[in-house]
Length: 355
Ligand code: GLY
Image 1 (cartoon, rainbow, N blue to C red):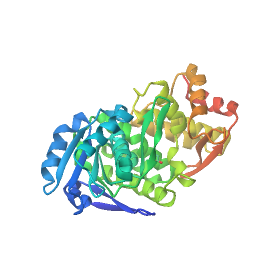
Image 2: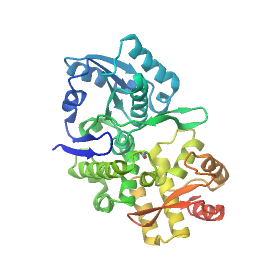
Image 3: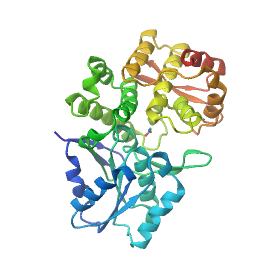
Image 4: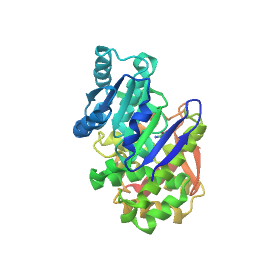
């Protein structure tokens, strides 16, 4: 069954979720485009070629870009611009981002910047890509100074999430992607937590009904948030739950940890902070640990790394006017912002996570 989830706002679009939805790609590209550039990582080369062959009526170009974060470099964007320049890619042509979150971030940036913006269709091929990166219009690349420092908010014309493409994904990739699904559960979709707790194996099996339900619920939450606050001037910040410490861990691990693993620890830290600095109950904090552990995601980190993590968080671009900001929960489903907490509170929360 296919579900269409609308994202509203100045540039509305649909997220099409289901099995076999890649067959609708030509509809998303539309009749105006003559050329289509598919940006994909090496691991999806054969699938990208199959996609090219299925898109009759267009001149389809392929841009193979490095895997994961290595794709998000200005040299890689320049490689894509070069292909577009050399093939006279016009403003009515279309870019397809076909890959995980890093690929769709790069493809979005390339589409946003070529001729000041061409049609973009995101085709995420990872769980985190489907429920987070490809939805919401954040695009960008990294610089030597940090992640996502260059980019733009640029809405795609459509997102095609085909659950069939997840079936060959290694299980640890699926489980890492579940960190973003769990995040949606804690910040607003309680039923996500119930479904995972009821049967974690079924919940994480890409062929199960529950899996589709979880992906859809997460996208519905994200669509609701970004429809109200596209440029993260308020509500959208809740999507950063677990990400402030999570990003610092990714940085400390030189991006060798999966994003989901880092934000898993980050969510336990945020839960402890919500308990120590606010009103989150012990039971709710325990629930974080139980659910994330059931997904074999990490829930602790070396205590001795605190100073390094703190320094990175202080530099994080989400710091506002010198203040560190954390998304915490008043209770499950009720996120709020903790602005400029005392370092002693942060350390007290970290001590609960540190080993
Ligand atoms: N990944 C968080 C957001 O899209 O705002």
